[in-house]
Image 1 (cartoon, rainbow, N blue to C red):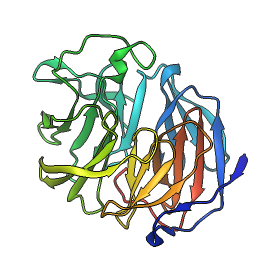
Image 2 (image 1 turned 180 degrees about the horizontal axis):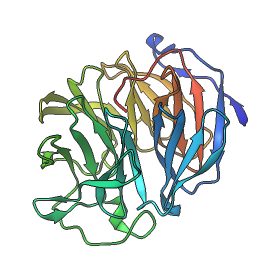
Image 3 (image 1 turned 180 degrees about the vertical axis):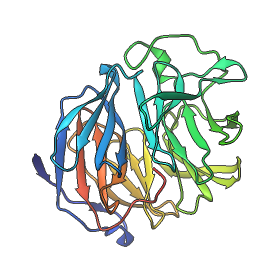
Image 4 (image 1 turned 90 degrees about the vertical axis):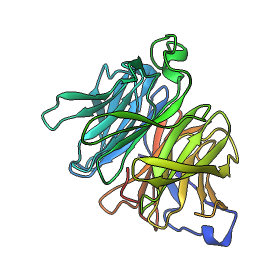
Length: 296
């Protein structure tokens, strides 16, 4: 395991998070790694290597990395539902799937109003079991992260899969390229990154609907991608580096990452106080003095 000294760049006095003074590099050798999800029941991290069409598995108990699934449908983002089942966004199949405990795969959504989705990117599961996901067009724009195809839908939007009926509803339709999304700890707000426009928006959640959508934060560097929240309601965002924002939108701190770009991140470990970071071709982690909110 390779370690790199690192120091948070503090932008506000509330940004003193505390934790390790080094990054651990857990894996290197991907082409564009994405979508990390920590699986507590097995103490392992799953993540996507999208252009290589595979999912990899890092074992926390011994540090080994192996192939979890290949081919993998050019999967991007992953999360867990409240039963601990894996929910994945597949560029290749243009769908959202769930991996059952017996290893079989259930398709949760591949169409809206009879039209094929673009290429689902990232997903979160709310306490009621609904799956919320973003659907930009990165996976059909070319053959690098999926299969080139013409879109069937009139843009890139945000959707919700009803946990009872399985109905797919569009919940936001004024994005350019919706990407990472994450709930506040009380699930009263949903934060969604618009990569193309360089900002994160904040929505009020009303059951199965959203309102508001004001700009929460502008990107300090690079392009916003994945998002996660900690138990204090701070927003952790992937872009050129990892950026931490106060719930009021103030940039608190920057965690420099020794890669050209950060794609996504997730809290994990037995106490949810280990931040895992996917960046370009590598996966890193750092132990912090905060915990991730439950929503993965």
